[in-house]
Length: 88
Image (cartoon, rainbow, N blue to C red):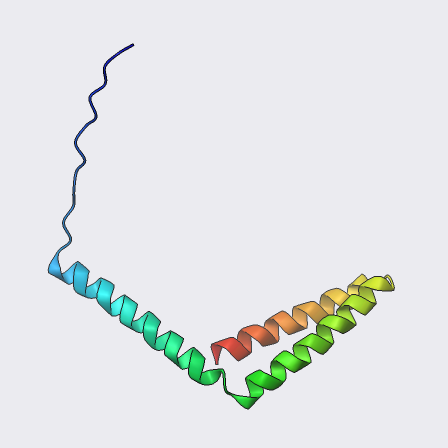
């Protein structure tokens, strides 16, 4: 059995520019989250989630009746719309 001495950990201190950049990234993320919350009360978003429930139910009915082609199309359509609603 060899005695291994743990090596010292090397530390990299961040420069002021790196720290500022990290804070700016955090600020942008917080702003995006705030905008998303404000959009949550958007009537289009509310109606979309009602619509999504209906389409998911329809897709399940298609799967139950061996029509996976229609089910896959419906789910692809919903995922595309969901990305558009969340991004705008």
